[in-house]
Image 1 (cartoon, rainbow, N blue to C red):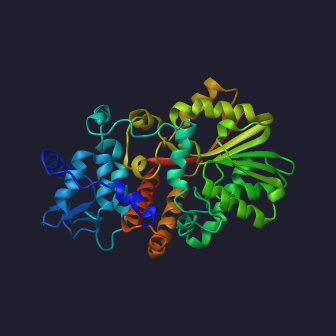
Image 2: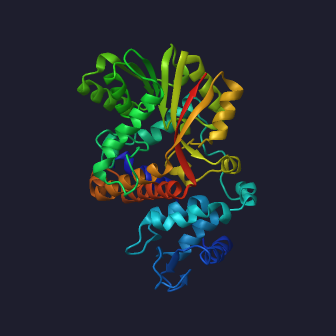
Image 3: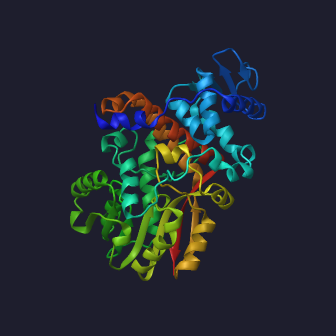
Length: 412
């Protein structure tokens, strides 16, 4: 069997016994659904929330005891695991992100700070690997080395795996808008960093090479570093095909090992993989690499600072299945770290959270459309449901403002 098939299956445990915690979870969910515009219909015939006649998202719980047992054991992990195991799905005509958005919108009210203070009584400890050089490589490989072909099933031709920047959101963007929006995002970063002919550019986190190609086409020379061997190989192919290989160096290298002096340092949604304890080191490194007058621009997924503080040690479904070692910063945290540990300061912030909600929606549409092709690459049904849930879960977060993303310029 292809080892990729076992990735999701091996991690997904059987549901625990339906005991006291399952009973409590059932009671809590019934109470929550009295105040959330979502209806849950159990295979036993019970209905929690509003009557099914009302037009609202519907959850179909096909294995109630397993569903509530998982939630009772670990609510922040169990909901996703239960979806992967097909213990619940959305009703006909219900979009998965629509079903998750009401919970994301009310998450701060639904989960009180006292819950986070007690989190280690129900959440496993020590399972989120630290982003040391060795740990960071393992964490990155766990996500980005899954398969270039798998990512190609839902990304646009630029292979940009980060928020696009659409020209307008007056009408919902379509797949036809996505490629141009991704290039607009890249150009906005390069413009903010002042990249032009002759600029020396360092990119931390290569992706599949689009930003490096775009910068080289401006006449810049680019060094781009990544920990993903698979990404580096395909990025090199794309750089060669674009005819800019003489201007671009692609290196499988930890950013902490980078040397030199650069007029611009850019990084797109990579800081989320750095880890809070390493943020000072990350920004000190950026500081040391910037030439006089240079600028750094990072595109970062963000969380409100009070939520960062409340959840910083929490181990979630996203950590277990999608981004081990991940940690979202806040704009306050970035400002504080740069002020305390570097000669840099935040000089501009461009929020674009709703753009990410639409980007994720379009990715999910593509992924679901190409579900069979993903399975033909060797990924099982649980993996596909895991990925579908991940994309919808994140879309709900950005749509409701629980999450944000911004292009942040940092300079001396």
